[in-house]
Length: 494
Image 1: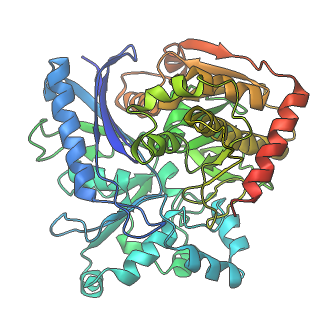
Image 2: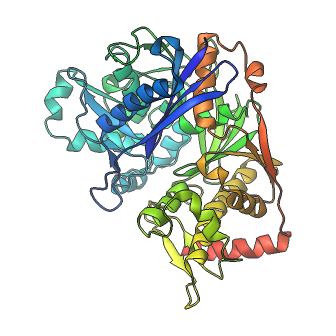
Image 3: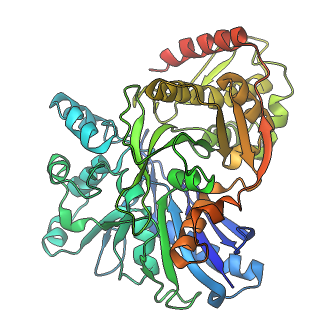
């Protein structure tokens, strides 16, 4: 039948969906799971909660679509990237909670690496700055803090990986321990040029080679399902890819210079730079987009990410009780004409590109007796958009040219007010696709390519459909004044 099952394992929940051969989403199911905050700045997930959310999603999406596991031709997995898990090979059980990409517990360790003068070496090999965001320092923390680990390491019982590797291991009944180049490029342990684990980096972070997964292209034959119960054994898993790279692929940004911004828990702008490895001098990251099986070279990308985007709206909903549902934020923000001088810097877990200030914290300023909930709601949306402007300006500096348009996706891209703000403050045209869940689409397309459902990327391009364009409606001087106020507030957050 040509059905592709996609597992989009995100920070706050898992979405399982089914795509048909036309690239149409037949059905989807989302399952949220608990966020664990043991200390300020620490973020964890129970890896078994993640696995159970996947099982739930697979079962319910098949029920909803009135299909059976036998109708699935292939499986594609996309995932929150830098989050890491350690598990016991003999039992298949996690040895500690997964440490989430947002977690800042390794800030002091990262500072120590900088003091040792290792930042230049690490960035040269990985394209990444030294920051708690990435997996390597998290793995180092786990190896030093999980009780009873020494004996298990000695007996070769320990496996480590990002969430893609964890799910692959569980789906294949423990037979496959692999990752793809896109996820490996986010660990800070893979060499961007060789696309292999780097011996020098392993020494710096004190990570044993034998606990890591094998690195392979993004649409490889990763393994087959085994002992899942709700679906048959033997279904091929043909794609693993990090969520942001998956969205770049799902947006059909196949040519150098094409870029997208995903509005999820965080917001992430990626630009395809082709087979050219572009080094950033403006605080951005160089990363692997994907590598197709049979291809010797990878496709690279420039990336800038803001750690908090949609999560800021969740904060207004869950912590501040401004709204009952996230979708209501647009109406509340439209209840006022402006922020009335209120600024909200969504640095709840530090600031990412281009600032890289892990100690920064969220900030609301400019409050007066006349400030209403609507002003704070509008300032939240503007903060989400303005942090992306900083990233795009840095990207344009690296490329030495203006970006003509930006493709947008992710749940928050449905907010028309936010999209208009983003176009206004960027000064470029935004394009929103008809299928905004491009993260799931990218993994599905890659799996379909791997399984032969789609024969080429040109065939996939035909599937892509546009929903709406947003064009900037404010004059350059007003944009400049707004950015000045924003930057003054940003400096106060760290």
